[in-house]
Image (cartoon, rainbow over all chains, first blue to last red; front, top):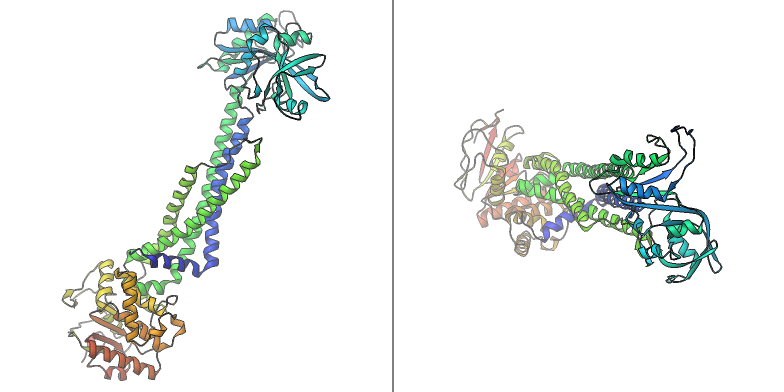
Length: 414
Length: 204
């Protein structure tokens, strides 16, 4: 087939001759592509949003905390209250070599943080510098705790994002300023913007972190701690060493080593696994719905083209009589189908990209994109390629019908 | 089913021949075979020295395009194309360049006296004008033969005579071979030779 201006002219003309029909048919494809691209982007954004909750959190970590015993042991009755102590940390380090980080946390709720006349009711957490390896902080100002803070028992603190915003509403770097926690003053060394929603005795947002030993002394806690955060070395699954961990802690406190309630070991691995399988399901759904809608649109195009071909039997017959080869007819019908799907589909991609961009802007805070909804350039290209393919496929059946029209038919059909 | 039962026909270059017969006599089948619109089982059909038999669709289309010009009873112009675009169409399929085919089509329309109607659509023209556009379309590729199927069938008698005069003049002036299928004795009488066909057999 000769490709010149008239070829395109003719294509456009046939599609524009029935504008409403072309538009409605195209809308099916438009909506299909829009659904597919928007769902892909939306799914990815949602996934990121959910993953943000666990942001910076080590995937092979676990939390150990104390609860009432549920089994009698060593002459003790069940229902006894006990407490983790700093010594348990040493025990774990010494007796469970598969552990990488063993970091104790002490916490206290309802502490009033005060800066001038700004007040915030926060939770105070006593931590060690190595805790950063369990839940990575995002330092907006200053630094996290360091070894010198611990060694010299410095009265320093790291503010969570919301605490900082309440105490320092005018903004700016608060490092070096003094903040009062209940009855003592602490010097601010950093602001942690970590957005994670993992709630370890109060979310990072709403807590103030101070050195553990200082906290134990300031709040009169003795050797007691509330939580031990652990991570396993590479190649070790937490679930494999959980019984050993429980045994080590339980033996020192006269607790039945099989009492899973008393020594809670909460494994984040399970959580991450759950989320992964959830998103596998969501992804499958997205592709199913997206591709399904797109296919329905393409079938619509094919259907309408069938009707068009039927309507144009005489015209096609005339063309054949005056010398159009079957290939010319074939390429004409398929080109029409491709053009229709392509124009409608590209608009669909554009619209989806626009909507996703709006979503992304909506989820941007302080210039930091919280969640990326926008699809990648290559996803868009792949959708465009898929469209072209669908266009050809949609045109095949109508084209086959058009090719079967004999020139003689044109003269009979009057 | 055998419709034609033995046709032995020789048409010379430059002849103006009419084929007459009642409906069902096989004249349409004969025209379809002559026009390479239909294939045949036995015998031979040679057009300008070329044996036409068992052609592929593509070859048939090519021969139709280059060697045969069709004129139909119902004109068979494409309704959404202007007169000049209709005339250009066979050239488009030949791959003639845009500018050249437009020029050739305009020349042909001018010969038909339709230069001023070039940009009009078929439904804006009278039957006679439409048939002249169709004749221009048939002639634009300089075919060996013109096959006309009841060319005056849809026209009133006055226009019918005009169209016949035009066809006769083309035959006389440009020595174009013409085969006209008709059941109108008046039309047949104007041709050089009348072939009567009945029940698939020629009776001259």
